[in-house]
Amino acid sequence: MASSSLLATPLHPSNTTPVATASGLLALLSESDPSLVSHALSRLLSVVDTLWHEVAECLPDLEAIAEGGDVADDVMDDDGVAAANRPSIAYDLPTRQTAAAVASRVFFHLEEPVSP
Image 1 (cartoon, rainbow, N blue to C red):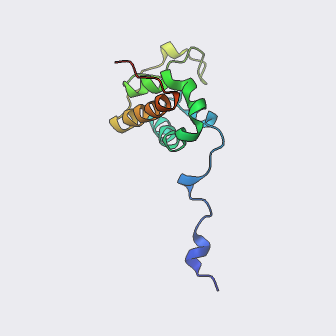
Image 2 (image 1 turned 120 degrees about the vertical axis):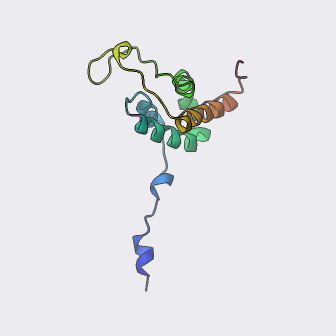
C-alpha cells in the first residue's frame, strides 16, 4: 500500500518541468513587472544550455537588464504605449546577475568573446 506522502508528490516538480521552447520565457523579458522578468530569467538559466540558439536572439535584452536598463522594445506594448514613453524599470541585483549569467552561457555556446 502506497503511503499518502507519495501520493501527494507531483510527478514533475514545478521547477523541473521540461521546456521545449524558450519563446514564452523570452516574451516575459519585455514585461513591466520585475518579478515576471526575474522568474523568466531563472527559468532561462535552467534551460539555456539546450535552448541557447533561441535565447541568442534576445542577447541585447539580456545585456540591457544586466546593465540595469530597460529592455528595448520598438513596438507598442500591450497597453498601446510606445516603449520610449514607459517608465524605466529598476531591476534588483539578483535579477541583473541572472541576466548576465544567461547571456554569458549564450556567449559560451556561440564561442564569441565578450567585448570589454
